[in-house]
Amino acid sequence: MMQNDKVIVCEKLTKRFGDFVATNEITFDVHKGEIFGFLGANGAGKTTAMRMLCGLSAPSSGKATIAGYDVYTQTEQIKKNIGYMSQKFSLYENLTVLENIEFFGGIYGLSDERIQSKTDELLHRLGLKSEANKLVASLPLGWKQKLSFSVAVLHEPKIVFLDEPTGGVDPVTRRQFWDMIYEAADSGITVFVTTHYMDEAEYCNRISIMVDGRMEVLDTPTNLKNGFHARSMDEVFYQLARGAKRGD
Amino acid sequence: MRTLRFLLRKEFRQIFRDKSIVAMIFFMPMVQLILMPLAADYEVRNINLSVVDHDKSPYSQKLISKIIASGYFRLAGYSASFNEAFKLIESDKADLILEIPHDFERNLIREDHEKLFVAVNAINGTKASLGGSYLGSIIGDFNADIRMQLVTPPRFSQFPVIDVVTSNWFNPVLNYKVFIVPGILAILVTMVGGFLSALNIVREKEIGTIEQINVTPIKKHIFILGKLIPFWVLANIVFTIGLLVARFVYGIVPVGSLLTLYAFISVYLLAVLGFGLLVSTFCDTQQQAMFIMFFFMMLFILLGGLFTSIDSMPEWAKLITRVNPVRYMIEVMRMVILKGSNFADVLPHVGIVSLMALILNSWAIVNYKKTN
Image (cartoon, rainbow over all chains, first blue to last red; front, side, top):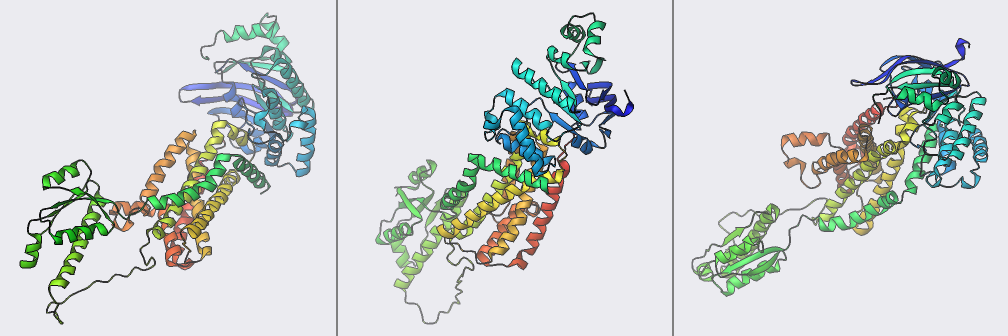
């Protein structure tokens, strides 16, 4: 691949909280339009790493650029170019579906016409037309997550970061969710996703697995399975995560 | 600017969707302003008086009925001896003992002077000192009455007499409510603004929505403005309702101009809301924010000059009141509403409070971190 094709470049990126090294010198690149899976047991340092890449948390050492912008000095430019969906549902529960879309569209600087057309398109695709004026709090979790994702890519960012987007969601909705991820990737959005579901890991172009703050492996699902002589990603993950010292 | 519009629309939607906030904004000023001034009254009434009347003469009866008729005292009972009366004080049934000696009437007429004994229960300091002095002046009055009856005053007294006549300005009949209502309104506006703003950002932190905001390219000062403006509007509504209650319930019409009053309150609210927002940038939970605000609110109110005069505070406390925004608010309220001060008179207050607003809001913007 060509050098300018890289949208995330990470070199020895580290985050320390006192003596605790949450993320230890991780080095990797992510290419445009790629679906990059970020795996690891609880407490392995996935969320911390992702928060650094989003400009929500300042790294302790190492280098990284997101869409060409530096994570230390250009966090606000980074934020214009990324979408983020956190582990915790973070749209406004006491606003309606429409009001949430309008608000985040406005914050990202979309014009009123763009907000209008995006809203129509989004409601149609999610089948939420009849729920448009309901408070988000009243929606089932699966719909909330799909709405969250749609809002995260509303401004057509270069990269979207998804932190366990399908946690607690039923299999059918998960499948639909991944259809949406593929659609986004097809339109050129790079997807950076963390998950605990190994079947989802198989959907990714490349996977990295973190153990105790370090990035142990990084390859395509097929290569990983071959390398570990495993039949499934489950086995690969188990072999690696077994050695972990932290987590719960 | 466009971003701000979206922020404001969102905040107002959320506020008016929250029934408890709406109730607080409209009912709190009414209830507090109607109930509080009636209860929080400096005038001491219902002082329980125990009388030990050894004389039981027409004169002693006259004195006692004069005291009771004053309206400030309530007869807790007659006691046969001082010790018996003292038991009433010990059991908290009486606040004052008046002991009238034997031969009160006789000595008064024959010897032209007599002593009365007054014992005061000083556990409730205000009640005791005010009660003691009320009683003293009633007895003095009684004394003057009987002198008029017994001796015809000479046309020209050989003793010079200085008679002090007091005239109360700005509150001629010393109506306590005229004094307290503007003060309570000042505190009310401060509390509503301070607490609402302090809890708001922290609430977003607790729910996690702030994370979604922090990952957007929104400018920090726009975000803070988006929080500041809605509460500024709400606090102004509370203030206006308060003024209406003062007008129609207590008949307090500001002597000075409303424009001056609103000019000051506009700047003052920026300071108070800035303080609340600053607190919220330091806290992670609503509980923390609540406690910190409580601590400062207590200080601000107790050192604000509403309940106790700042002039009689010790020097160190006077220094603290200089950085207390509530103090300036209460002063301006009284100056404009009671005295009719104009904008030039309150200009120093406006200046100090503007400075506070500037410092607190800048600090809040700096301390609000999108990247941790």
